[in-house]
Length: 82
Image (cartoon, rainbow, N blue to C red; front, side, top):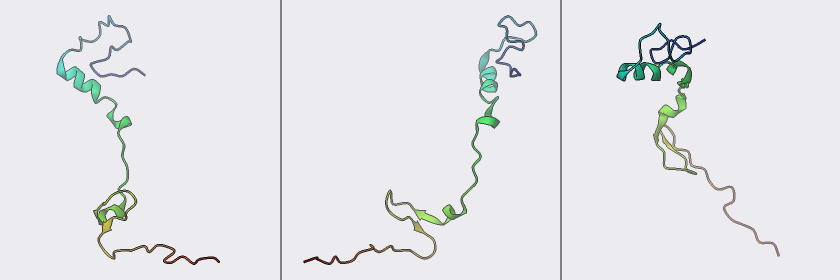
């Protein structure tokens, strides 16, 4: 199936007598938005991201609405082997 926008000849030939020449901003705009529905991402919204107040950066927990979780290091003090 060939595209049917004004920037594309109907039968695939450059000398197509069935369509007018596609010139100007209208032809470029219609050719550019022809396949938008297939190439656009429609991602679902993560409901947990609505709670985020600030993202401090990589390796750090974000500040969120609700309880602030603090993760303690797994080892507070090392034991020495003799």
